[in-house]
Image (cartoon, rainbow, N blue to C red):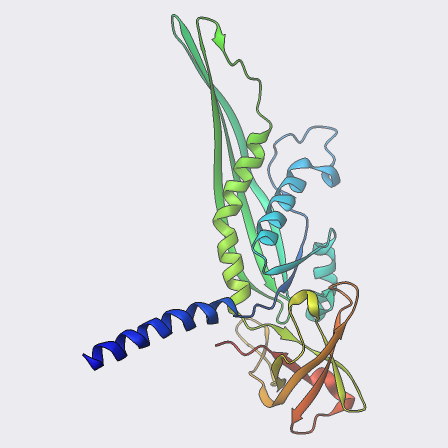
Length: 294
């Protein structure tokens, strides 16, 4: 009987502790830059087509931004000319100021209207199909870590009986719904890919033993947070692909946040103390900081 009471007490304790631990789990928001979607379809591309003001491109960008923002795990940085910036940045892609870059395109778009006419009734069904493609680029390496496509559908039906009922024209909201349905299939994978990798930052400067790193309160950094400092590994070239690959770094010590400041996510910095082997303060670009993933 005593053993049963002890077991019951342990179960109750675990039921209290586990939810409390889950609630206090810390999430550091990732900075994600989203470029304008390209429209690879021929839909509505007439003589006077204006690529810069294509409404479908804006629709896709707005929908994806809303879905990612609602997760509460990202700080979104819109970069309209991101494709140009990426091509110019090359190996220095981390200068864009984001952890990840999302590039997308609308690959398919079509709509059709079907109807049925009977003696006393008629129906009209409008259907829209949209296809989207997404590429997720890690700025630290310049590699595409996720790429996928998805299709979405949306439809609406109106019915008339004896001349009574809806007689709807083209429903413009269907394009939003179809694009949203396609993106919904990809968003969870985007979130998982970004959050599975540990948050990464860099030491920007050192003043009288205090180290300044990028990142601050808007990302979730707070006083007392600790991170592991690594010395960068050697960069080698893969002879098969020609790509440069950075070998794993070596741990030099830990850094602890003292305070943060900055007005925007782009300008936020944190002052930190450091414990570990001596760092080469003249070459701080040789180091990086990683969140410890449990």
